Amino acid sequence: MKNYSLMKRILITGALLGISFSVIAQPNEVDVTKRTMKPGAEPPTWVSLTGFSGEAESILRFDLYVQGFNFTNSDAAQYLIVGSNAGNLQGRVTDRYSKATLLSKGYSGGSLVDQAHMFVDEFTTALQRPAIARTKIAFKHDGANSEIYVADFDGNSVQAVTADNTIVAAPTWIPGRLALYYTSYKLGNPDIFFHDLSSGQRHVFSRYSGLNTAASVSS
Image: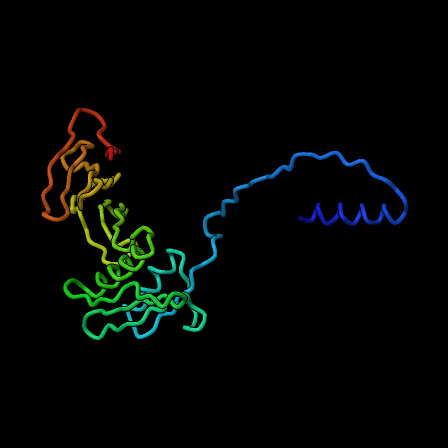
């Protein structure tokens, strides 16, 4: 559009000056460039959060913030999140633009932490985004001896998996299960153990001579 306006001005000027032009038509070229934002550079989705307090509010704010949301007042937010945590957690999410209620639910059972994570997961699912608030991390903590621990993705609810009092390493999640593989020297050799966190069941998975470590589970 800018090129067309420029050409039009040139032709008009030339006509006034008595200059003739020979114009050769050229095919239009369109340069399409896909711009990919770097991680952390995407603009936030604005939400307002009211009615929650204490630990529940802190968890909700963290879960939302690390997933690309940020907080403002109800007049500037796209999504209005209103609820309470007097006893069990209750929450409602409304899209201020469309006036649609995306989620309205009360939670029971489990801890308040679990309820807050679940609420955020159901909200992000309603937006067709990945639900990560109830995911877990597994890690090795080094002390006099190392042990395997699991925690919520925000670092809360830390639980010990092993008490082997020896070297342990390389915890690996089994897709679709609350279960791990990891390496432990408990039996005097670096062996891979299977550990079901739901039942507490544990057994040796790989105990060949030499080094058994760094299990990798195919999906």
